[in-house]
Amino acid sequence: MTDTRTAASPAASPTPGGAAGSPRATPAPEEIADQAGAELAVRTKALTKRFRSGQVAVNGIDLQVPRGAVYGFLGPNGSGKTTTIRMLLGLIGPSSGQAWLLGRPMPAAGTDVLPRVGALIEGPAFHPWLSGRANLVRLDACDATAPPDRKGRIDEALERVGLGAAAHKKYRQYSLGMKQRLGLAAALLRPRELLVLDEPTNGLDPQGTREVRRLVGELAEAGTTVLVSSHLLAEIENVCTHVGIMSTGRLVLQGERTSLTSQSDRQLWVRTDAEHAAGAAQVLTTLGLTEVVTDGTELQALLGEISPADVTRALVTAGIPVLGLAERAPTLEDVFVRLTGEGFDVAR
Amino acid sequence: MSPAETATPTTAPRTGGGVRHLLGSELRLVFGRRRNVVLLLGLAAVPILLGVVIFITQDTVVGSQGPGFIGRVAGNGLFLVVAALFTCLPFLLPLTIGIVSGDAIAGEAATGTLRSLITVPVPRTRLLLVKAIVALCFAAAAVLTIAIVGLITGWVLFGISDLVLLSGDTITAGAGLFRVLGVAAYVAMSMSGLVMVGVLLSTLTETPVAAMAGTVTVAVVSAVLDSLPQLSAIHPGLLTHYWIDFAEFLRLEVDPAALAPGLLVQAAWVLLAGTIAWSRFTTADISS
Image 1 (tube, rainbow over the protein chains, first blue to last red):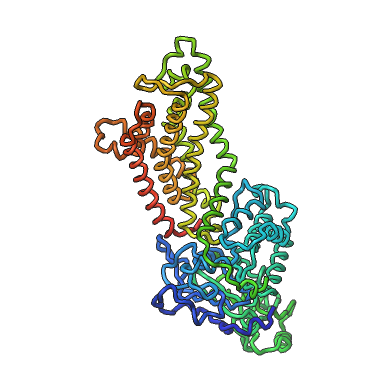
Image 2: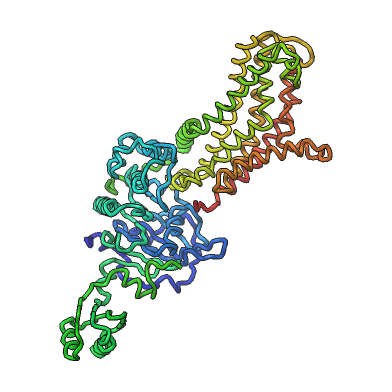
């Protein structure tokens, strides 16, 4: 998934905690188009949402989604992803900061820009007493700028998400997976330049999840920019060209996916017996491995430039029984855990 | 699905067309919903039941009893329309209207479809306008249902003859029909303030039942306040105060000046509730 599309990225380098200390920018007049961000499908500047309760759900984030990217917007439940997406789409107003979609300011330019944006926000939502198809007809009829051939477009969207056979079933009789698919179909009712998909794999079985990944891949192939959020890192990690990771309202990490994980240090995993765990940790530290963590009989450490073969030799020389040893490429989750010091699934 | 294809300016403003499309879809949604059809059928049952009961008891002593309009039904089917509207006015009509207008925005919020509509995008002012228009249409349809079913039932059971007015004067059946239609039109107009109150409450909550109950409560409280002579100072401003003025159509000369206060009070409530609803809905965070 790392093709030429990423070349235009202005966000090529990871910016851990980049948004954290930036001062609030004075909001410019709303209708000014975003000159600098013309190459960006989504851009925010110090975007902040403070709820009336005083809770800061989104804290000064600078989102940068290049055109053509598949941007994985990741973070635990409650980290501010959905609130950010709602601000991007003009459903809620930011407390401070600005947002642009396809180079136009939101929410001011919503009427012009939203027809080019397909969205699935916080799960699918339809009238339960209408059929899946009737729900799509309703949405399309509400679209003042919808292209002609409603019937053809709706049938195509339904086929695309595999709901052709269930189109006339009442929405309330749909399974969670079918509801999610109908939500995707609604986002695909007309050609879009940008798709914003909030947790599109929620409630889908592994088969459905794979299909969503395939669909996202197809759309990206055709040139559509996709912003896809998820609280399950592993689920969408592989389809993304870019990644932004939220934690407690802040964007702690953003950039090209490959550069985020490959340049981060490789990890080493060792298993020995309980007696020798401490000794093994000693050997690893002496060798120059960092962040050595012992968990019972298992150890983890960052390899740095050291080769696993050298580690094996050193351990054996020190008389430590090596029951298992492996090198792992770091996953996004490892990167996240290292940056925030907490498990990915831990909500606040 | 290529960006080049989508870059064509398909987004030229077509406000008029936008309202028309949305209005059609909204009318289908509201009038096609089974719950709403059942509400209308319920109202249609009122003149039928009323007519049948009067028909059965008309030769008995009980038959000649009852308030003004009801006593006259047996003599002329036209009066069944007036009697049925009079029966529905205090509670059944406000209930029906409360359910549909309270559902306007809150119902979409509860199903989550409000966020889909806003991101389609449907401009918020346009959405509110169309929701209000359709709620008004439903209120008119509710009154019309009672009137038409009342007219048919009255004609079948009692026949339609020259109309004896409240003053004792008699006008032809044709002229009488116009008078009865005037009654229905006035009752329908009298509902507009309550409809708008319902739409307003509907923008304040994500729970449709709360907006529905609130709307009915407003009508009931207004009627209670209207019945307290100590509060006569505020009576002219009450939503329900002039509801009964439809009787003006049954006098010898219909005096427009006598109908004006009721219509003005309704217009004031529509304006007030509509303005608050608009200022609230166009700025509110949609987090449902």
